[in-house]
Length: 132
Image (cartoon, rainbow, N blue to C red; front, side, top):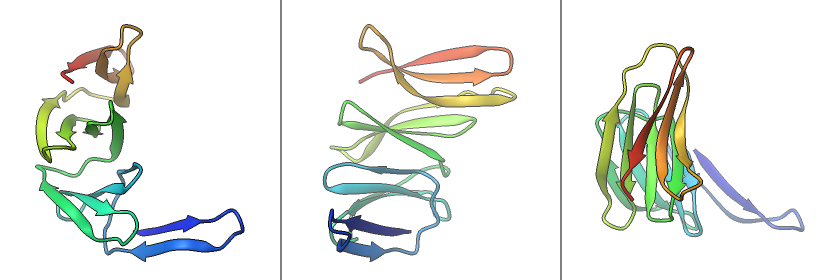
């Protein structure tokens, strides 16, 4: 995994790389959150120097990462999701959905302001409320 910040003039301001095999990455103001597929660890990395802030061992590798409310990161895969509190560095919610032929999964915000994990298959759509 490599991280570069390019300036408007085309020069590079910060650059680092890490030996991570990842498919789920989310970036906020100061941190890169990267799921390491080899170790099943979520790495919270300082985006300026590439050093770990903290890590969280999870039960599996997830391939999608989405922020909700600035306090949580939802990691999901075709059969399971987990929500991580970015302040406490702990998993606070998880759901196995084991549905066949999943074509979409991810966190969404409803018109009423609530957050849900939406899982869509060829034949049905399910919503699981996230407690934030």
